[in-house]
Image 1: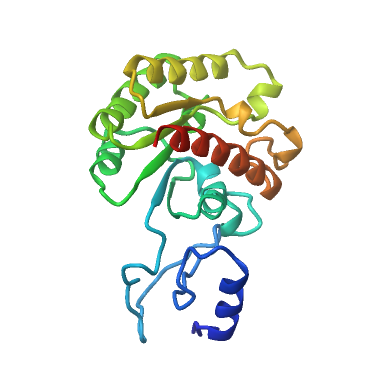
Image 2: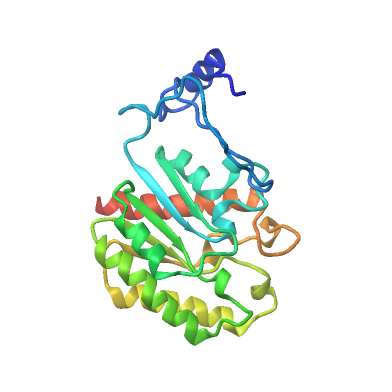
Length: 238
């Protein structure tokens, strides 16, 4: 059972910049245990117009985008960015499943409920049976579909965040980053922005013990740097 702590919500809302109506309650489910929602009962209604921020940020990517290894769901970088920019967020992080499928590109491009987006591309296709040529083909079938259909939206394209393959100096990760950078350049869209993941997560101390997933501190660095890039681009150009 979830009870609405009305007094606490009002107090918190009074101490923070106004983004959400204090009457609104958002339930954040844990990241790791399996959760099955069998039914929802009670006095529940969707948010009314004006109860949420007017703008929404969509984040697509791997388990890193999803927030794996964060201390709590609100520590994931999409959630942190939404607070920094005063927007709502839609997290499409797919743990182990960010394979850049055309169907996902169609799903994202076809939605009309987001104002700007970030696309994290590469880590789930690095290694294993995936080749550099296959990654190039995946990017070519994914990114243009979104960018060309949504030229009115700001889209921030992130390659691979700093990880163990950088420590190992794996040459393939360099090729992957080049593919993403060149794909963005080839599209030549004024609202399509390339971002090197190493410049968003610069400190290896921000990685968990697998040297792949950021800790809450690593997510904080990503969010701060990415939000800065977003504000610079969208603020300067509208």
